[in-house]
Structures are given as structure tokens and as C-alpha cells.
Length: 78
Image (cartoon, rainbow, N blue to C red; front, side, top):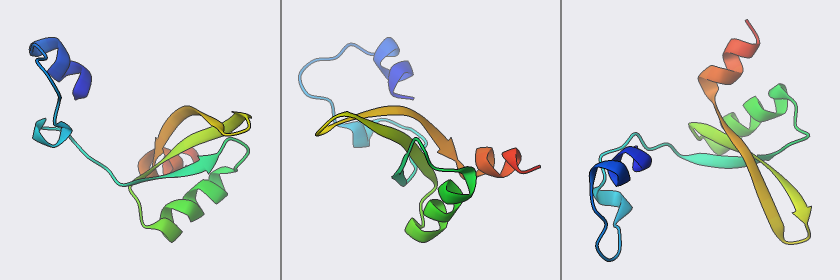
């Protein structure tokens, strides 16, 4: 949604992300080594809509590898 907004609008000054119409989800991190079961448990424990997969490459620097929704995880079990 953000990419589409930026393509369709010229940016002048600061951008208030709250003003952009978008599908927003509550998210929480999970480490790259986590299993799908652990990812699903994180979703349930944190009561979020999606998780982002991360790994520490260098101490203090996290790299994000992607985002998983509950639907994507549950489809992996089917």
C-alpha cells in the first residue's frame, strides 16, 4: 500500500503513514530458526495478526527476511 501511494503521489516534506489508506496488522518478531509451530505460538501468545522473520547478522543489527500471516502458516499445515 505504501509503495502504491508513493508511486501515485508526490512527496513534499514528511509523510504521515497514518493518513495513507492501508491494510494494517499488529506484528511481532520471530527468529529465523523458529519452526512453524513456534511461529504459530508467537502469534497466539502475542495476539498479533502477523510475524516478521528476523536474524541477528552482527551484534545489534537485525535483518528482516519476510512476513508471515496466520493464514500462510496454517496453509503450511494443510
